[in-house]
Length: 201
Image (cartoon, rainbow, N blue to C red; front, side):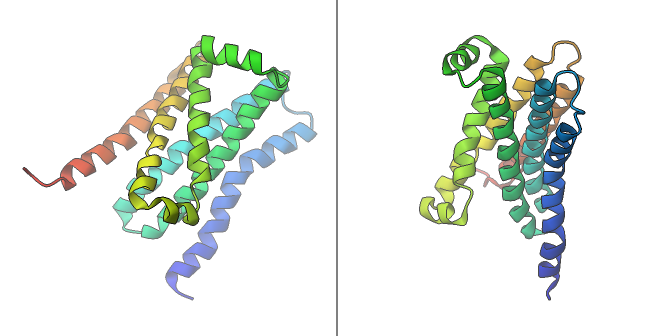
C-alpha cells in the first residue's frame, strides 16, 4: 500500500465521521428529548452553524494544499462541501417545514422582507449548482475552466452565509464577526496568490 493510499484509507473515514457527528448528536438529543425549550430553534441554529463551519472548512482546503504540497487534500474539499450542502438543506427544511408548514407564500414574504432570510436563502440556492456539479462526470462535461468559474460561487455563498448569521444575531455579533474575518482572510489569500502568479506587464 502506498503512502497516498494509506492516508486515504485513514483520513477519509475520519472526515466522514467528523462531518456526520453533529447530525448524529442532534438526532440523539432529539430522541432523548434534550433539544431545549424550543426544539425547532435548536435544530435550526445547529444545522445553520454547521453549514457555515463546513463552508469555511471547504475554503480552508485549498490554501492548506498550497502550504503543504499535499494535492490529495483537494478530494476532501468536495466531501466537506457536500456535507455543507447537507446541513444547509436540513437548515432550510427545518425552517420551511416546521416554521412555515410548507407555505410558499410565507417563505417568499420572508425572503423579500427580512434581510437575514434573503442572505440565507441566497447562500442555500447558490449551493445547489455547486452540489449538483461536484462529481467528476460534471467536471468532464463542463470542462475545467467553466467548472472552476461556476464553483467560484462558493465565495459569494460564504459571504451570504456570514451576512445571514450576522443579521440574525440580535445582541452579540462576536461570532459572526469572527467567521467574517475568517472568510475575508481566506479570500484574501486567493487574491494575493493570483496576483503573484499574474505575469508582470
